[in-house]
Image (cartoon, rainbow, N blue to C red):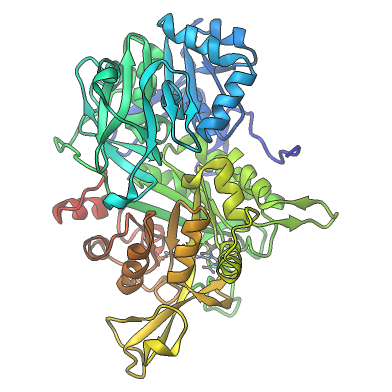
Length: 578
Ligand code: 1PR
């Protein structure tokens, strides 16, 4: 794609009152009151060499490095690797594609000698996997061969959800260096493949993580470090890890521990969602509907305005949100790449928010007024370049699933398939907007109907969940159950499961629906719509297999702080990241 419509190169960000301020010497208070000072800490030692081979989005890593006050020098030629004082390799995309680029650019060999010479190195995610002998991802594919072992896929037949997405904990070995005080803290993982510990690679392992089995979460030998998780998306804990690597000896980031609690397993995620659209005066605002109606019940009938997107996202990060989602709710009719403010929102947010960001709305093929055609992959790429970690597809996923169920053929051309092929399944969320339709007899409909906890208005005992498109405006001939199964096959890595009936009502999640869908697929499911109290979160996690729960209204209106939700989950014995 030749056109990048918006790219921020300026070290500026929008403050809460939209005033532009310099980022130098900015003090940013995290949720647990630790203070990170982002200052150009100068000297000759403030440059980090980044190996970005152009196969995906490494904007988050760039943002985190810059946030910590360092400058980035990009590797252009193999010689730049050899000249590096410290090298960060944030591997992205698929294993085979990454190895191809490294080999074609003559970088594989140079990278091996840099590492063999024990020069400061930090690999992230695929940047860890590539150090091993080979990977089963679309393979076998040969890796750099520095560490004995084969990278294989998590086995979902054992009951775990794949990809492994979320905040998990490490079993840290002694002398792990940059991870020294990270044991008992949650860090953010998102991957389907992993390297396994063995006698042959034991001396490399600095931490393991348990997800159905113990896999290698980090390696360390001398100055060589690599982590399977994403420090750049792991909040204050992750920034501290990065900073320890960058400073080699001492850490400027002190993680203040207020709680003695030790995390032990994958946490259930609490996600803050911002429905964003342009209001009638042309400002991009966070809005919130009741059953998808976002207009006030006044004479003016204006779009409900609950705040500014960048400001609210920053607040939720500080409050402990495990992820932040932006849904461009009019994306179905407005072309998102024409919507520069939305891309700017992502850019500015990602400079200061170090947890995963998802963006949805309008991801589909599009031809603009001048006849220029954009593929859905180009739209998604622009979102990724602007700072998104995941994209969420609504209407277009419904059309793709319908076509797939009709023909039984995977064309490879749907937005879902194209984006997941390039960026990986874990980067593609499908947002489902179902509406509950009651029936007396499950045989009355061709879609999966279930017995519901609360009967319908005429005493109906059953319901099916009809998928909609265009922000709930049009019902389609496909159920949420059928859609979820189809999009999993087409490459979705996660499902965001809304419910139009419950949206904005504050009466709790639709447990019947969440159970139906989360039992139907092996990818993670995010329960959404209806949260009104902390008990609704524990209920959905206790009664269903949801991996995350999302809320909007109660957070925007400050009715329930995110921390209270987490504290409540812990009291109820449900793992949460604090
Ligand atoms: O179809 O690919 O362009 O994507 C459009 C996206 O915009 C979809 O993800 C769709 O869910 C969303 N959307 C479209 N119209 C609306 C609307 O509200 N009028 N918002 C809308 C959907 C639902 C939730 C909400 C939860 C939690 N919002 O995400 O945040 O229901 O709310 P609550 O905690 O207040 O109950 P495309």
